[in-house]
Length: 370
Image (cartoon, rainbow, N blue to C red; front, side, top):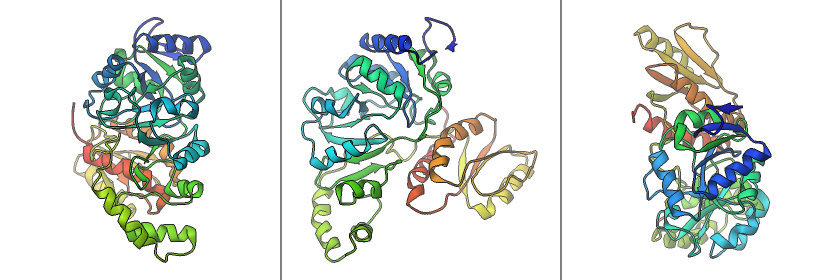
């Protein structure tokens, strides 16, 4: 499939060996390429070319101080980008790469400020998508690749979404199908004394703890809550809160590095969005429709009332499956011309943490126009 025509900017290409080779050549020439990953589609540029990286910010309308994640062909490329690689970070790379885990590490002098936002850290990962890996290997280097959408908007999970968002701002889009994970990677900071999750994702604190034997700090958790969670894994809470407190105090003097997806408003539809408790969802939707509003609904447990006045969409009541379909569903509902999008509030529990993070930020940013 080729859209809108061979040789034209913004075209979608099937991910054949020839198309991947062409995409790698475009990247070497300083162009932008839409790249599928297992999380979301990325807007890729040569991470060592400051001028190419600047094109990412221009295409997205992204503030220049927002750092980018560098995607690598393999963990063997880490020393080019990271000046220090803690043993726990290396253990996690071995366990989860290729995969949806980004590590924040102290950068080498070779990493351009345009990639890091002027910080002394860099985010790196190896994506788990065959097309992304083939492109990275053909390019033989690191690619800076934030989500391939206008800044603050819904992340793309298909090649068509990238084309809708960026059009001719991108030289080519490689079609790798729908993204399997569907939300952005977990970001884990190793630049300070205590590992800390700066963005939740498919790799959970519990997953991390099983590999390195300690649970990372999670924003919003108190020292006591973190100690309690660690005790659940270690079987003994004695002294854990006291031991964690000095490190927490030391890190408080070192602000967390800026990372992608940390703003209060992000992943947002243009249609105003609100979260509604399951017991109230159908009634609130019907009430708004009764007042003459056009209403779109995203549910996971509430049954579709078959009300012709509503645009109703359902996702599975499973956090991984829900995440996989979330952005495509939000994008579809944002396109029906509704006055409101109502989202059924999510269940509690650690499995829903990453999806809840995305929906909370989407609600804050919704309703804004470009």
